[in-house]
Structures are given as structure tokens and as C-alpha cells.
Length: 147
Image 1: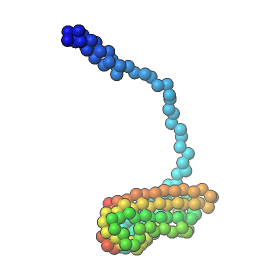
Image 2: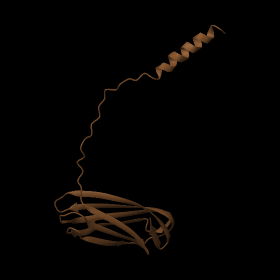
Image 3: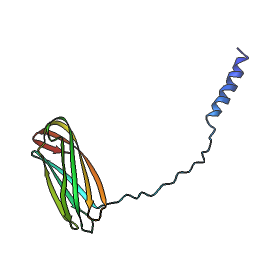
Image 4: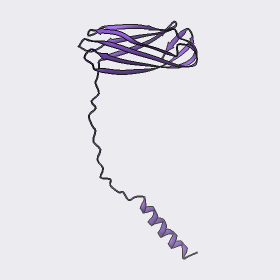
């Protein structure tokens, strides 16, 4: 036993030292610039009787016009009507500070809900912009409450 004790102490000290050795990694990471087109729009969503009211506002300084496609996907505990609402041909012509309201419905269901709104705007110049908004809410029959 007396011979094993010094061997045990030395092995603990040696093996414990292996965890403190640091090996430098010579790999460098550099941030690349993101070339993502930005369109200054603001999307607001409100719930109400039998559906949603979506407001699209131009918060920039320039006027833009084009076609707007919108899809609203409602994932609730129990959906009767309105789990997927979509439209592909809204003509849009917004000056700086101007807004448009869209009434979406009917939506009837029950339970907590996760609402995903996806917008795709194709400008007359050919540029395409996409944006999405996720909202939590509660659906009680024909009434939609958003948090």
C-alpha cells in the first residue's frame, strides 16, 4: 500500500495537468457583409371579429409601387376556418408615410394560436423583397386576440 500511495499522488498531479494545456487554433473568422436589400416598411397586425387587420406602412422617404403577395398562416389548437389565408395580386402604390389596411378573414377556431404573416413585394423595377411577422394570440370562436 505504501508503494501505491506515491504512484497515485504522482499520477493525479500528472493527469490533472493535462486539462490545463491549451492548444491555440490558428483559424481566423471574419465577418462578411450582408448584401440583403432593405425596404423601409412597417407591418402591424391587429385581431378583431372574424379575422385580422394588417397595416402596411411606408416608413421611408421614397415612394414605391408594385405587387404585394401576402399569406397568413394560423396555427391554433383547433381551427375550423381560416388556417391559411393568401392573396397574390394587391397593387401597391405607397408614398412616404402612407399606409394601407387589409382585412383578412374569416377566422374561426379555439385555443392559443401562433400567427405567421409573410409578405412578398415585387417592385416595378423588378426588385423583390420579403418579410415575415410572427405573432402569438388567442382565438375564441370568431374573436381573435393578439399579444
